[in-house]
Image 1 (tube, rainbow, N blue to C red):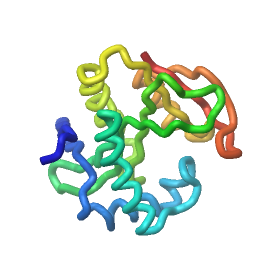
Image 2 (cartoon, rainbow, N blue to C red):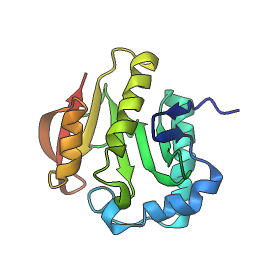
Image 3 (cartoon, rainbow, N blue to C red):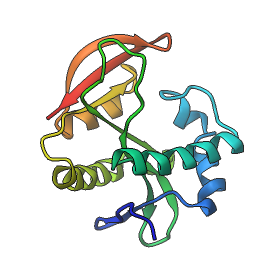
Length: 173
């Protein structure tokens, strides 16, 4: 039995990554519209499997991680959201914060899915990790994610370069 909590909202189920998610998950992360502001390169099946395994380890080591976002009505994989410990080589450092992230299939952009999912994540996190400070990094051209971060209570704390690309660092208490 998994120790990864299942979160439910009106339209969504947030759950652990499963082996049977591999095809849909790899498809998500190989879509150029998805990777445009994140990894910038699509991932292959092996890399997708590695990410799934990595997130299970993150839950075990950190007590938080990423969830698959599943639509309740169709059980379709819509993306992933959650909390991360990446120990990124970035300045200013994210040390002492829990990083938040969200990624959804383009067909559901603009429907409030990411906000609904992340509000559920922060509701859970407030109980599981009280008093934590959160961070997120966003490409400055990703206006939709910057807008969502603001709605979730994040405020810009710095502009920097990460892996050769302009990056906005945001924080939330």
